[in-house]
Amino acid sequence: MGADGNIGALQAVTCYHHKQIFERVQAGDYKGARELQYCANEVAEAYNRPEIGNLPGIKLLLERIYGIKAGICSPEGPFAGHEVPEDAAKQLVEVFRKNIMIAE
Image (cartoon, rainbow, N blue to C red):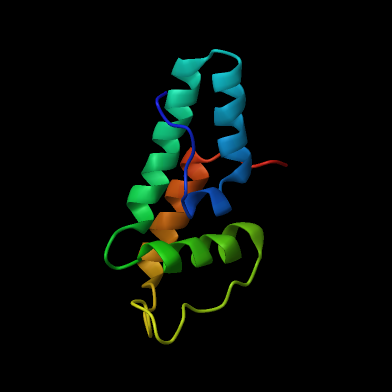
C-alpha cells in the first residue's frame, strides 16, 4: 500500500482493527485492508473536528469504549481546559462503534 510504518494516536484505540488491516495485507487482500483503513479514517475525521480534537478524542474513546480513564490533557498544552461537548462525544462514539472492529 506504499507505507512502511505509521505514527499515530488512532492505533491506541484501534489496535485489533489495525491488526486486521495488517493481516489482510499479509494475505494479499488489499481491497479488504483498504476498506478497513477507510473505516479507521472515518474515526480520525470524527475526532479531528475542532469541538473534539485529536487528543481529547482519543482519551474520550479510551474511557467510553474500553473503560480506561485517561484523564485530562496537559494543563499547559493546546487542549488546556478543553472539554468535549456531550453531543459531539456521543457522535464520536457512534462513528467508532459503526466503523471499528474490536476484539471480544
